[in-house]
Structure formats: structure tokens, C-alpha cells
Length: 502
Image (cartoon, rainbow, N blue to C red; front, side, top):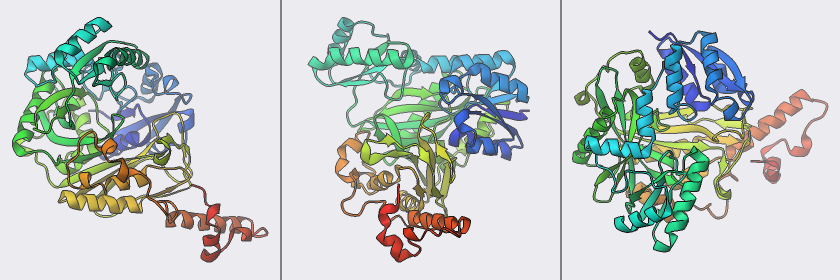
């Protein structure tokens, strides 16, 4: 049985994995870069080891250093979280070679599903619907133009080795083909070291719906239903919910069966996600598979009642799944939003810095997966996500209302955050009514712009309270130098509100 897990990651996902380990009675090992010495995952773990400078290429992506720590600490398993080494087949192979359990799928599954062209071929062979397009990499412009004209515009150019919107171009006009293919190949080469691209027919009004799957090492695979992930900005998810507001029970069953078939086609074990594109007529097509835990996994956990990290660990330990498909059900509705240290009113520029005050939302049906605390400095070297806020309720409308309440209660000062922007999304009629697709943000800019008059920040009571507390502490520490010039009551503070910095 696994007794000690090294979590090869940082931030909220590292803390989240460690929580499940603690419930299982498993010791945890943290690794950290020089800017993460005071990070919450380092404090939470049973042991912590320094692995290098801030850049991830010199720390969290150094397979040799992480394996060295695993050996030194006596960890018998490694959980990669998501990002970094989570979908790196070579790291999975290294773990196998060194006799350390990789809490994830086989190198074969990672390789097969990591290459989008190979994945398309595999899905076609398994009978899973795929978007019409090519099954071989496109290497030259002449071939690309010929194929695009045969498929018919509009089309999507996509990097074979990539994801996350990199190496992706939408082509609607014939005169844009050459430039789109060239730029997609160039970006793919820079991002993934491989300029191979493929072509798919573009689905208008697309919905991005993914199915969570679990497979064990005994050939059993189940799905844990769908997540609607169509609120996206630049192909990055912003809001996720489950169940999907557009789903019917019949389509859910068919897509779930397709997701299971996709996983079985690569002998998949562990937690994974089958992503689909769905059109307005509920025709669905395989998009890709993420061979790891997803950022949005908590909403599935809340609606289905399964701890996915515990299941990952049990599967890696060789245990069979403890439930069958017919025993899994959805109950209620869950929504997740991602809180970033960024300025939505300034083209979403990252906002690294020191968190001066934080009030986390509480109450019935609220889950907060974070890692920041007062005094913690958000580093500039990594993804600026601070936390994930998840709510659950019996109905979708109640879940939306609960999320609004939770966002209202969530206060962070010292850095700018996406909280006001997320609050505005929840007021957009198309979202409230559940009739949105991946064009949601670009089609609803009029609702998402900053509100006129008093900004979302100017009445931030938590900020004022934090400032008063700060002044009081100064006066206690330096009684001979009272901070009277800054005001010591609400009336004076109101006059000097411009002193506050966000």
C-alpha cells in the first residue's frame, strides 16, 4: 500500500492532493522553488524539499531533481497534480524505471492521447465520433490549401502536439488560409517543439462539454457524467458547471458511453477527461483527452459524491473500482469559478504582489480550494490562479444565487483579482438562462465591462476594515508616533479613502 506521496506541484492543487492523502493516512512530501518557500503547500506537507530557482524549467519541470527527492524522502509514489509533469510520458517512464508509483495513466495512454492526430485515429477506430478533418499531419502550405478547400470553410487549424489554444487558428476566408497555417505552425513549433498541424471542420455555436472518467488496472472504466466548460476566454476556461444546462438524459447516456469507449481504447487507468465539441443540435464530436486530473474536478466530486484524488491513489495502488456505472448518479448542481491575480479591466494583466487581506467565503454549499493567505506574495513566475470557488445547491438557479453570495463575501486586497469580472458573468442573461456557447464572452462584452459610477472596489468594506486594523497595529507598535494623519475613525477614513491601494 502507498504510504508516502510526493506531490510534484505547487499552489492550490498541491494542497488539495495533500488533503486527500491526509484523510487516507498517507504522509506527504512537498517540493518547492526559491519563491515558494512560504507557500501553503510547503507548510501543509509532512516534509518539504527545495528543488531550484523560480523558473519552472529549473524546478518543477526537473524530473531528475524530483526523483532525487522521492528517493531521499522515501516516497513510494508521486502525484503530479495538473500542469507541469502531469502529462509527461517520459516522467511516467522514469517513475516506472526507478520503482516509484506514478499516480496517473500509463506512458502509452499519455503518448497516444497527447498527440492529437494519433488520438483522432484511435477514436475513429474505437467508433467514437470525431469532427470531420485530417488524420495525418500537414507539413506544407499547398497541401493545406487543397484540403481546406475540400473540407469547406470555416475550418480550425490545430497543433498536433498541443492544447490550451496554442497553435490554433480559425479560418473563415480563403485569403486568410496561408497566413493562418503559417502562424499556427510557427506558434506550435515555439510552444511544443513540433510544427505539425491538422485541420478540422469548424463547428459553429460550439459547446465545450467534457466527461470525467475513471479506470482501474483491471479493465473497469466508468464515467462520472459531464461538465459544461463553454465560458472561455482565449480558449481558457473561466466558469464550469455540472450538469450541463443543454444536456438531455438520452444524449448524456450516449456521450458517457462514448467517453468510456475512448478510455478503453487506450487501456486507460486513473482519472481522465474526454472532451467533446457539441453543436446546437446536440451532435457531439471527440475533441481531445486530458490524461490527468482537471482543474474543474471539484464540481464533479460535489455532484457525484466521489473523491477523485482518493480514487487516483487507490487505482495507482492496484485496487479495483468500488462502484459500477449504474451506482453513480448526479445530485444537485455545482458551479466553479477560478480566482486569478489579474486585472480584468486592463486586458487581464497579471497582478503579482503581496496579499494584504483575504476573507474567504463560507456558508452552506461553499467549497474553497486555495493556497494564499495574508502576507503571502503571489509570484510572477507561474499561473496567477489564487483559488477555485465551488458552490453546490439543489437547483441551478439556487447555485447561481449562492455563487453570487460567495463572490460578494470573497475579499482580497493587495493584488487585483478577477472577482468583479466573475460576478458580472453571473448577471448576463445568456448565462442565467443557460443558453450560451464558447462565444459567450465575445458576444456579451456589453455586460462584462466595468460598471459605471462607483467601481466594484470603491465600497470594499473589507479593504477599509483591513486598513483600520493596519493603522491600529501601527499605533500599538509605535505608541509615541500615532498615525493620526491617516485618520483614526470612520469619518476621517471616508474623507481619506484615496489612501487605500488595491
